[in-house]
Length: 130
Image 1 (tube, one colour):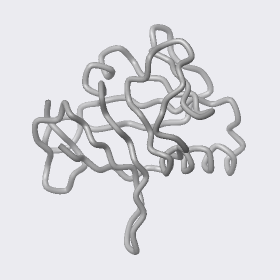
Image 2 (cartoon, helix red, strand yellow):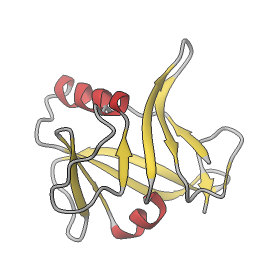
Image 3 (cartoon, rainbow, N blue to C red):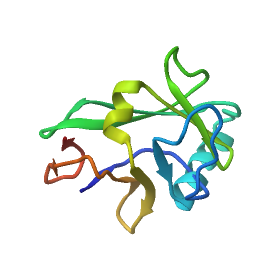
Image 4 (cartoon, rainbow, N blue to C red):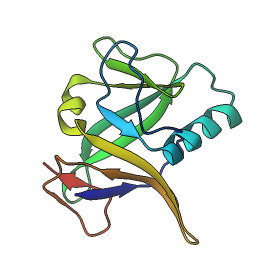
């Protein structure tokens, strides 16, 4: 099920390269590009893209994206096309197999998540249930 969340992030390739853990989610080329652009623009070299599932919205769960200097103890960490990504073990259960894309239209831009674990999503697409 597709769920959408606007947030400033970038990615460049759909094939993850593993650092310490296997990839929990995969960024599209557009998402990698956007994350790298934000990192460069904000001078955040060496930061991680932290992707977490948190209580949110009318469907119960949402995506929380942040650029963080360090991953937390116990986080799963991997690298895709030069982007360091981390998530906690609880979020990894909800994110397994997810693809994150960057979508830009005339009226909006944001990350779109295609999550095979999402059973339903709210009408606005900002939250999901599993």
